[in-house]
Image (tube, rainbow, N blue to C red; front, side, top):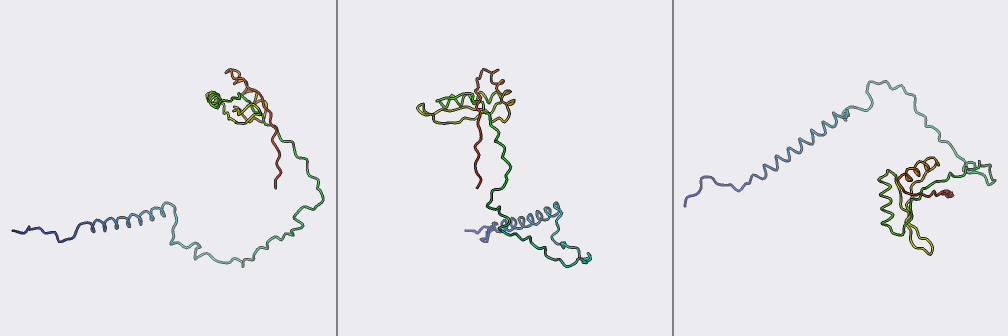
Length: 173
């Protein structure tokens, strides 16, 4: 039997492809770094301080840190005159409804959203009555905002009840 004229020497073309891809990655990385340095204006080969600048600066003296006496910084045990804190401003809410069924509360919230009014659903348990889902609009800080929103709700046949809430003061540690 005759042997073929072209004979594969056992070497595949895979190594030449791998070499080409490797060279391409290296050239691409070098070009990317070069473009990034050119765009940002950074030159890593330039020194941070110019060599021709005269150095006539006086020797730097370290700034002294302020000293604190721990017992002078803390207030004394004697009660001091503190200005009376202003009473916290009340927050106003408009309660558009209270439902035992969560789906009814969601429907009212969606109806309010269609009017452009943002509402929240607060879920709470009422003694001897079960769980209620309150649909509230607010909080408002001023009564004129409350009145504008209430008139919008009234125009769309949604009755609303004014709820005034005083924020609780919490002591800071």
